[in-house]
Length: 176
Image 1: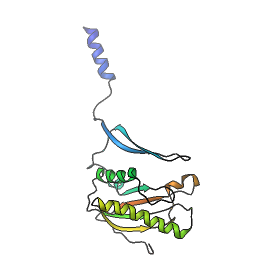
Image 2: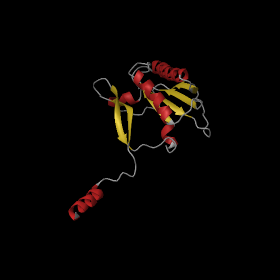
Image 3: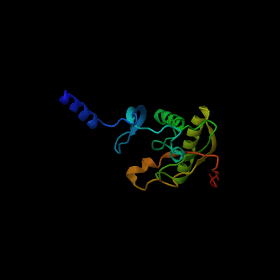
Image 4: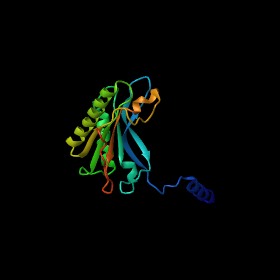
């Protein structure tokens, strides 16, 4: 009996603490490959997730959507990701959003400027069709790159969605 009791105590001490419950979520994940096409899939994630009320607002103020070289077409994966991230952060459909498009430095400046605006309009149109409010839509071409490394130019082909909180002010960029 003492041996059985000792085993129970030992097992209790060695058992991991379950003070916080783990949550299983299905989330989109994008695998990037430098030499091949990017692959997107849904996968399961197990962890301790913040509840929307406890989430840090700074994590939810800026969303980035990536595009293929020379394209202004929003992929189904990116479209689904935008809506799910906005919903997960508790962003309401009335929250003002600023949509800004960018390109990498490949190609002439005038084409990059046009392409960046087309990308921003594609995202804004998608968000508006789902009831979100796009306050400003702008294209900045290849200005403000995230990287200068040619192997990572895919990071520069993006649209940024900025959520404007009530205390923030938006000042449009001249010429955009």
